[in-house]
Length: 243
View (cartoon, rainbow, N blue to C red):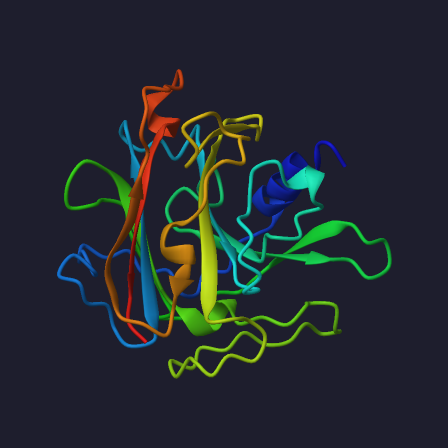
C-alpha cells in the first residue's frame, strides 16, 4: 500500500479517454465572479509555464462532506478522502484535455481503485491559460462528480443534468487539493508550503460550499519552498461557483 498513490495515478494514465466532452475554450469563465448555474470553476495556478508532457496536474475532490482534506500521502489512509480527481498532462492521453477518475474502495479486497468516468459532451470546459500568470482552469457541471460506487455491472451512468443539487451520492461541501507528479508518477508539489506529502494544508472556509455563489475563494501558498521544476511548482488555487 505504500506506493498506492503511484498505482492509482499510473492506472489513470493507462485508461483510454473518451473523445466526447472535449471543449477547449478561450473564455476565462469565473474571472468576473460568475460561472453558469450548476457549475464550478477551479484554477490551478503554477509558478512556471505548464508542461503537460513531463508533469501531471491533479485536482482532487473530497465530496463526502466529512471535512477531511485529501493528501498526496493517500497510502496512509487508503485514499478514503479521495472521491474524484481531474488529471491533466503526463504525456499521452491527457495532454490536451483532462481525464476524470473516481476513487473507490473495492468491496472484495478493501483496496483503493480508480474508475475512468466518461465525460458527457458539454459538461467540462478546459482552458489551458489563466488571466494572469501561469496555470489552467477547468469549469465543470457538478453533476458529473455525483457518482455512486462503480461496483455495479454495468457502472451507474454519469448524469449531465445541470440541476444540481439535490445530490444523491455526494455532499454539498467539498474539500479540494492540488498535486503535481513527475514522469515517474511521484508527487512533486502540493498546496502545502512544506512539501508534496505534508498534511498541514486545509482548504479555506472549511471547504467549498457548492450551495453558495463563490467569487473570491482562493488560497495562495506562502513561504519560500521551491521545487526544481517551476512547471511543477504550485502557486495556489482559485475557485468560482454558482448554485
